[in-house]
Image (cartoon, rainbow, N blue to C red; front, side, top):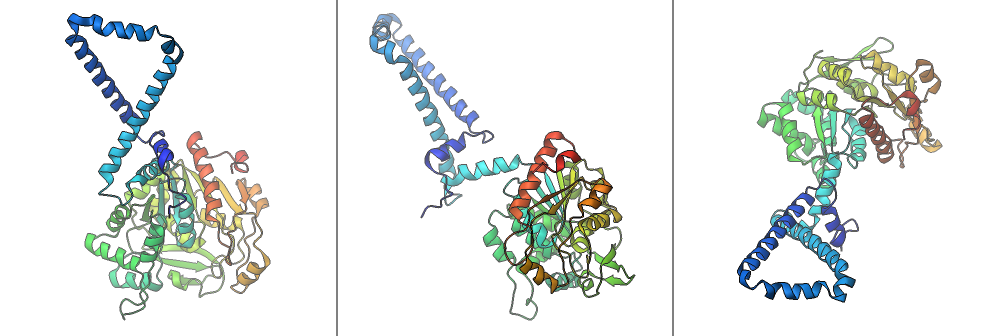
Length: 451
């Protein structure tokens, strides 16, 4: 059965002629070549009948002065032009299909695939700093609008499969990178199932995901974690790029509000109470040049959603990333979490989240996006069992500090209070396009009406 989203027939032909596809110029060139060919044939005939020109001119003169020509001549010319254009376009499309027939199972889909890639390639440049489920979900929404995406992912996780691989191979944590790579893949359903497959058998493999092992293998082959990610970005045909915040193994050193110091990300929630500050060890790891380039070229930089102290802030603690963000002219947007996290942001409102970002050296966001939709009693009760509560938007505190804030209904369906990636992506893309048009961050007075 044909997929409802398939583009065939006239629609596929129309796609070949849309701006940016690079087909119209070749069709025009083909038509110019055909006209030159026809002109050459006519010139040859005239030369051949040079001594008998009357035999050619008399029938033409009779046709041109006839009533039929006077009545239908314009329509005949229009029809010939239209048919000629259609034939030339169809010929180019058929040629492409013929050339691609040995490379693609359905070469007739090429127009749709190429059109999508061209349109997404014109999208705004967006960089997301973070990690965890929040970042990968947001990437799924954004990839429908632009392929100029760069995810800069925290690699300080020391639990589970990532922790075991870190310890065995002295490498950064690969887990969040695996999720983001799958989220940006054109074949996410198949690739995600493969990369996120968790082995259950074998003493050494049990508990590891294939994606983590794949990244580890490439790191061994390439001799460098950063180069391994460069290779993966090329291999997986992504709608964007995924890079680690640093290509060196780092760990978190967390200080709680009560002054207790916790070593390692996996131990943060084991100690009760909110976090006061977080640092990396070693303190000044290096980043990749691609990360700096993406931040400087971005139209929009997004912080969050995700765990504030273990996903969003860690990339900002890498000196190269912090310096590039401070230098970038991109609009900086913070997407506030919907719920607090026990052992991390207990009692935090949205303003407290932003204050923590600034306390860790991040420049002040140009806009803060908070959820304005009700979470629902059932979900609130469920989260209370985990000592988590709804994050207060704190609009009065933002107003007093002069920080623009806008509320949007961002809660997705389901049992958890996660962001709706489609709705959030629509809001962010509108901001990014406006920032690209203006060349500067969206002014505060416009922030509430951008979306």
